[in-house]
Length: 311
Image: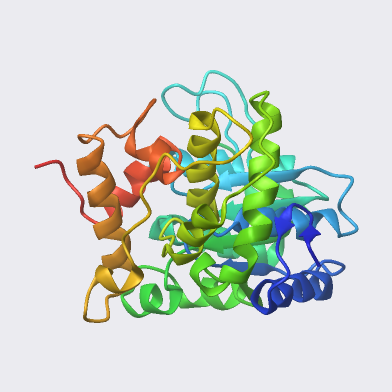
């Protein structure tokens, strides 16, 4: 398969993901999507929802890393007017909005420990209370969660409840990193160059062999999202029908270290490198968030998690 709900590829690694989506989409089973940053976890969540009986309802998204802990509870469960300072009116939470639909909990590994018990209760019973109200609300919501964390390790460290993890991890789908599906790079490159060129009003119909070789040989720590960003910069600087790259993709994967590093260590090193290259500009044009293909709030959350501080 080449294009499955905007997930591009036909390698064995991505075909296994397509197969699992087809297996699980028609059920109401909770799904856990695992994969590094930039691999396309939200696209998989949208594909599952789009092939389900709930597809006529909205897929409601919640990024667990994008909000401070004190706001996540009201964002998930809603609040009453006056429930806390700044609560000027009653507000429905994501669970109510997603009733009879699907709720995509992105970066679930960042959910504060004190809220994990409340989430577990909702998953088990379908019931919760708004902040500032003792009335029980019942909902029918299909949960799709995603994380780039090693959740077994988070559970061992006591940072994530084991009972919640078991509830979420009923049907895991692991998305392979781009370096494990390099056969898909020509398809991905052609798809994104065409899409980006049309959006920018350009006509690029040829990707030179030298460019394709550079894309093929690079290790892609930011995965498909980084590839898309590199290609967009390439389209911008290309003045004719041939694609040229604005980036030098020279650093081989082996240079990340002679010794095996944890995913956290690799991610931390990459984020630090990009921050130094952008002079520690976190958000905005030409910032580290833009280069990494992340929301500014997500990047700040990753920096806090990995203890990255400006020197």
